[in-house]
Length: 212
Image (cartoon, rainbow, N blue to C red):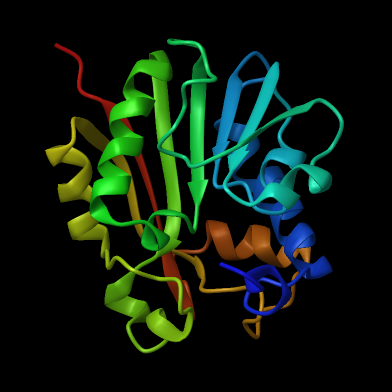
């Protein structure tokens, strides 16, 4: 991963504008102010910094990520598969953006196993990441991608590891902020509400642990 944040994932002010719009037009309707939110693979903190919630926790393997977090966001440096620093039942909304394609299936399964215990009874996991069915041409332009998922295989993997998909959007967003769509809030809001998703190659899946 040496140099990754200087090349493939360099800072880009457009990214924060996109996430501000995503929070305003989508996620704020799904995250309650009383929720406790966990951002897995937080990176620059673009998601968690925009969240309004009772508690905000971010975890990332990159030691430099904590410097990008807003005041009030708790930082844990380490792999997403090690959630030992989080109390059981203390997370209502877990989120992972463009994370699991970078992990092996074993690492993904370990993350899900650890997360099950951390989620509250009504807790859920929302995943945003490339959908290989639509992004196969560009998928391995990122040299750190090691696993392939479509909206079908991702849901099957979640089910095989004790999670029940409850929302599946095969086409949710363009692949990166480098797309031709302007990073302008109202336009992103229209894009999210439109049944037509030009250039959309990222999927969104929300899942809950299957309870006995």
